[in-house]
Length: 349
Ligand SMILES: Nc1ncnc2c1ncn2[C@@H]1O[C@H](COP(=O)(O)OP(=O)(O)OP(=O)(O)O)[C@@H](O)[C@H]1O
Image 1 (spheres, protein in one colour):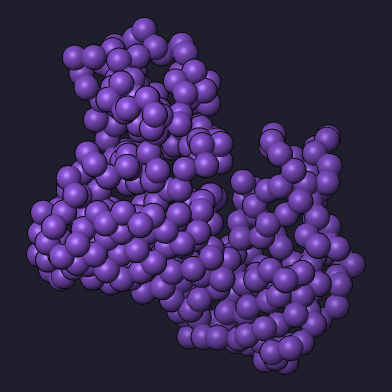
Image 2 (cartoon, rainbow, N blue to C red):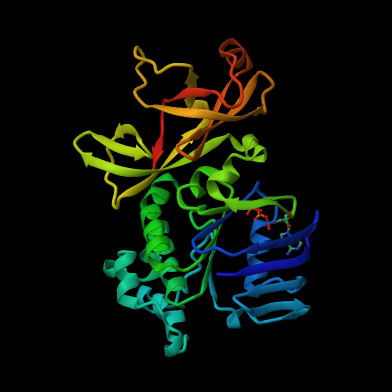
């Protein structure tokens, strides 16, 4: 996809200034603190902000040109908000098919049966919207959006209104939908832990400005992300997923983590920089069994002055460790050194 933004939108506290060109497929996560302008940016792309001025183009179509704005219904996108916003006078099936019926047949590229299967909606089809749980209603809202056959999907914190159990219920569907539908997604969230599970590209916003944009792994290693709680994402190949432990390959190296039901041959490990410690040699007498041989690429100050953030290269992938300055000095850690990274805990996606 090619989405080029170069527009301004006045807000109460600041002017939103969007200047970025998103060129890759997959999921772009728009991340930033509450109130930095993420929803405003999404609404501007959707054509819902009349005060927006500048340029928005998508795959060579001009959606905004100066003040000339293409009406929302002519932009080939679908948006899902925090609240499902289902139509209460229609049942689940009619809500699902609402956009589908209004999409010219030649433009339809999503099939109702496929979407119903993908989001496991068949048991809900005959219900009224008032009979749905929050998670179920949001699944229907996602299905309705997909069935508009959009070329771009805008998701504005679709999990935010759900409690912990509701989020856990819907997340696998969201991941499946993102992977299988192959529609480019712009996903807004102020939870970094959430977006790193499925984002390919990460855009950081602050006070109405886009601070940086780029591939997920390299973005997470940038200093401006340290204040959100430094973390890394390692892409791994699944070697064995039988028995109690899952064996993963990272280049030539292996890791073992408690097994989880996972589909496919690849997974992501989310590792908090705090859960990584360093040693000069491979430890034989430690309870931590996951040790990765790595090279120190950079050492930078951490938000707390007593700590430093060490950026490592493990088999070509970035991994961050947060350790004390004392430990850095004691081990005389320097850029270019070979070290072993002990990983205490991971989340698997
Ligand atoms: N229609 C509007 N006119 C002027 N200012 C607005 C309007 N809507 C929102 N704002 C202000 O714009 C700023 C950005 O709001 P926005 O909802 O885009 O942020 P956000 O990053 O999505 O926040 P959150 O993560 O809490 O949803 C806020 O200060 C908000 O008060």
